[in-house]
Length: 466
Image: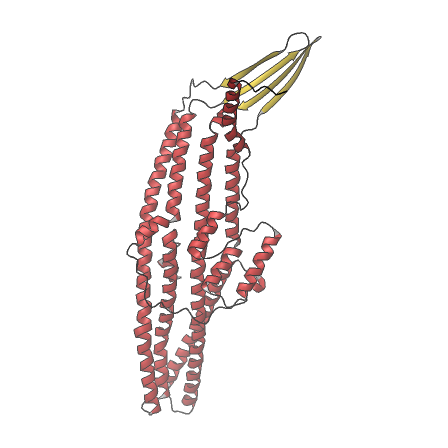
């Protein structure tokens, strides 16, 4: 015996119901992602930094990161390894990573169907008994579900870009702090050598003065040089400690982790500086703050459309009722409640949304203007810093070295005294210190330029001065 097929009108109705309810069922099943929205942020870290990031959610994650950080700190720290430690170990960045999870939960929440409502009532009047059952559903929220989901999706993407930009900013600040710390170590080491030389000169001057072969004026000059060298060494040591501590804060280190080793000197200058005539267009194509501003404007526009759709419908609910009585027939039906726009027609809300949209548009333009100016300033600072550092490397320091070599020859030929030789050494101090500072400023300017190409730089020249 074969089962008869349902009539064609019924099949068409079933197909229609299935097509209508399938997206609703999918929305009701929206779930959180396994990576917590970290995939785009990791892509930015890989593309622009060549580094890995992790979000710490468990003790196993913390143990794995701690092991990796210990491996990096066991070797002399480089700029790249310092950035990697900061990306893994900086808890402020980890706190920002949690913003992704918060934004994703809001997106998932906006993607799910509203929960239905059910009410049950039982009334008695004498021998009469009434039982009311009501099943209700928020139709307004259901109608607005696609729009609110798009809005939250754009906000989630904006959060991903904001977190990515914070990550890039941390990487740039870590590079700058690293070069500042290495330069401070190099300067302090050089100033210790200067102080030892000044100490030897002051001691020799004291002995010669006691023997009557040196005037008090000449002895006072040598002692003044020794006192100044001692003061400069103290300042260099203070700068070494402060720059190292700033680097430690960015790396998120404490305890024995702070005993990492830095290289003895800054990296050499590159052979040639970067030549990027199209640097503005490159920056506009990949600056995350510009992309985030555009995304915010699009989200505001979507929000404006949502306000216009719901301007007349503030509360729209659909309810199904089924009432039974012990002394009467069953009562069934439905009810729809709607707010009547008698006094508030929603014009104020629409005007507010339009003002917010125009505000976001103007901010996009201003962000683009600032981005172009910042990248031009960063590139100019980079080229100037390179030219200055190269001038010290190729001219000033070699010239001072040749003068020193000639003075050594004169001293060996007994044409000048040891104190004239020491005076020449004092003249070289400023050149060497300035050369170290110029080399440091170049690498800091390079970090500022790298940041300006992908996001808003922190400080530029102010950062190089510090």
